[in-house]
Amino acid sequence: MHGNITHFVFTAIMLLAAASFTAAMTKRIRIPYSIALVFVGLILGFLNLVPDELHLREELVFVLFLPPLLFEATLHIQFHTLRKRAKIISMLAVFGVILSTFVVAWLITLITHLDFATALLFGAVISATDPISVLAIFKQLGVSRNLSILVDGESLFNDGTAVVIYNIVRAIVIGHVAFSLQFAIVEFVKVAVGGIILGFALGIIFSKIFELVDDHLIEITITTILVFGGFALAEFWHVSGVITVVVSGLVIGNYGVKKGMSSTTQVAVHSFWEYIAFAVNSVIFILVGREVVDILGNPDRLQLNLFIVVAAFVIVLFARALAVFPIAAIANALRERIASREQVVLFWGGLRGSLPMALVLGLPSDLPERDTILVITFGVVFISLVLQGMTIKPLLRRFGLAFTKSEEQIRYDHLLGEFISAQSAITQLEYLFEKQHMPLSIFEEKIERWRNKVEVLSLEIDNLIGENPELTAKQRARINLTIMHAQRAALSRATIDEILSPEVAEELQSEINAEILDLNEKER
Image (cartoon, rainbow, N blue to C red):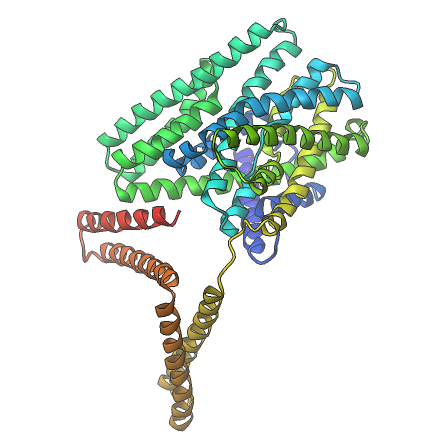
């Protein structure tokens, strides 16, 4: 028992260390973080460094990984921004997924020996999008908030739709129920609407609980109970756990956080779930790479040749195109105003990720065509993550959707870099002189040169900012944020040193946190 726990802890530490190293490296190289993690998983798998018992199992993804990812994503989505894209998001997340499922199923039967019902199961499995790496690139390049909401919102809700369809088709394929259109429609409405109602109810109830508590540790714990308990309750009542978590997260993020949490708690809650999402995503994508190695290393699972897998990927893209472009045209007719270039990004940014893999791994082991569906799914997911993930950034730049710095901003950054460098030189000279490592004559000669440079650079920066009001506003916001973080840190130090009581420090920090949240909200 003791050995098993030690082994588990060691494995978890190894995975987090690999993820941290990869995250640090991706800041220096031009490759999306999640894609880099897949390659790390491939390497760890080939070297047999990931234990055989650690697989990307259905229960692992659904019970442990998926709920916190969904909740963290919804905490940052505001109703007023989601409402602007509600029509297109709802159409893509419902009708788009249904259309994609049937198109994929029909075309897959033409290139494989799968019957239509089993092919429909694959269509449901592969229809959910997972644009984690795309959204990270959006943030990095400064893509518009409206486009980010469109991609993020569709992903959140089409996950729920895909899971509902998957469960219905799965029940039919494995023989629990006979197929009928009436059964499919009634079951879909029951599970989806039930998830919405339960999620909304839990969101309201827990929001009221937050109003009764004023302790960030307790409130973080309460959100954890909501996320995992809400998902489990939904599954127990046979409604959609995915939709339940998404809706409850939206209610908490838009109502519970603002009405029932202090500014200090808001910062703590967001920071906690942001870390959880980072850790979970890291482990998921490493295990994706690990599972691909497992597939490649099993000859019995490689009965399908590369052509079938590539053809399946092309079919999935084709189905995605049929879902996105006609629906976007309908949305534009309803005055949604989705530009052609945004439609292309929405189409190409619909990556497949961990959810399809979790769904396919949840198929019964005695299903005759399980290995066939598994190999195709893993192949499509791997190609999607690498090909689409690696090319989305050039696509955004090609369409002019990436934020491009103005000449003034570039000039400011250059001057600021020189200014910081010169200030550092002065600091080092003063240190060397104080320690008597430098003669006075050399010190005076050097210090005068660098002080003159700092003065000139300071004047140039002031002139540049004075001539550009937009640049002035950005720098003022940046400086204000830096000052507020410094104030908060000083209050924490004063509490540790017993200069201030914890109550006074927390009160003052709450005021600062409120200003930080307001500033961050404006930046979004």
